[in-house]
Amino acid sequence: MTYHMLTEATAAGHLGTIAAICDRLGGTPADWVVQEVGDGNLNLVFLVTGPDGGVAVKQALPYVRMVGESWPLPLSRAYYERLALADQARCAPHRVPALVHHDDAMALTVMDYLVPHRTLRGALVEGLRYPRLAEHLAEFLANTLFFTSDLAVPVAQKKARIAAYLGNTAMCRISEDLIFDEPFFDAQMNWHTPGLEDVVSRFQADIPLRLAAQEMKARFLAAPEALLHGDLHTGSVMVTQDDSKVIDPEFAFYGPIGFDVGMIIANLWLAAFAQAGLRPDTPHDDWLVEQADSLWQDFAERFADHWRNIDRADEAGALHALARQDDVLREAAISARLDAIWRDMLGFAGCEIIRRILGLAHVADFESIADVNTRAKCERQALSFGRALLVERDRFPDMAAIRPIIASELVP
Ligand code: SR1
Ligand code: MG
Image (tube, rainbow, N blue to C red):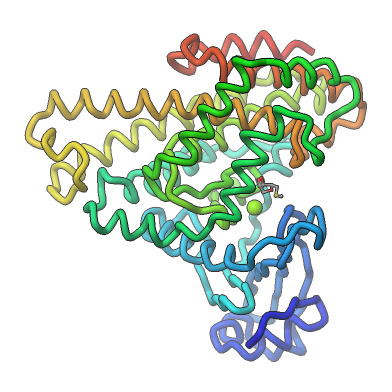
């Protein structure tokens, strides 16, 4: 089958030739309801339901959807996405949707239809809360990042896995440009809320800030520590009150552990900064900031426990193998490694916060604040926090040091 773009009118006919999908949906393709619901920046997404069930069908387009055909993008991202979904399912089976079918030529990834899940970002904009969110995200992060790292995987196998993702360069390039470079100069596709012009020019002239962003880019480029999701923002998480699933790993590659952790925590912080504009009557609501705290805490505990348990099982990868017989040495190694991840997390989170306000790809959290002056005020506070994370990382040894800074910025 050669690649052709599916539409709401043609999708059922195409999917009706695939046994696994027919079994799942029941009836005949004529009975199926197809809706294109893609609201992301890159792809088509169809929800297809039949008498017995449904599937979510993602199809990569040969270009960036939010920009159009002038920005071509390889279809191979669908291949890396299904590779990552399978690898993540081995590490954290309850935290990712099950793969039903894939077709690399058609750039199609067919997965469980997650009902009654909804996108976390949209839910946070509405002020909804999810009691098990931090726990679920911590499980996803600790499991996928630990069990694909040198702490758990033998050297030759780990190198083969790094190699398996090496071709996802176009997706990495998007992150390299949009997260670490473009927000810090007058790039063509940047845009910002009116009223932030002074911050834009200050940031563009801010040598320590631009250096710190390049330092983070160097980590992103040259630290293949574990299999990353690569785009773990709140739009990549689907939630219900008692379940959370991480979707969309098309940016997957082997990179620094702190990147995934920093992306998702930054997006919780972005949501917290937007609250003051979205709900001016309750601007001091701490729930989102607490979620970021518990997410880090739970992640760190799980990561450390995986390390202790894998040592006991004697199945560990090469890294720190010598510490296996020495509890004191192991605990010191765990603590040093978590400190390094924390430091990376802060820097990556700072870049993410800044790029979501000054770069090309913004977030609905701020865009949903109708009043432009209020939006600019919330974004200004977040930018100042993001800069501090990048440039003054030494000020923040733990979440306790960060909380007062966020609280002081969250002035209505
Ligand atoms: C051109 S793609 C813009 C952004 O959308 C994706 O979700 C990634 O976050 C990317 O940086
Ligand atoms: Mg995505």
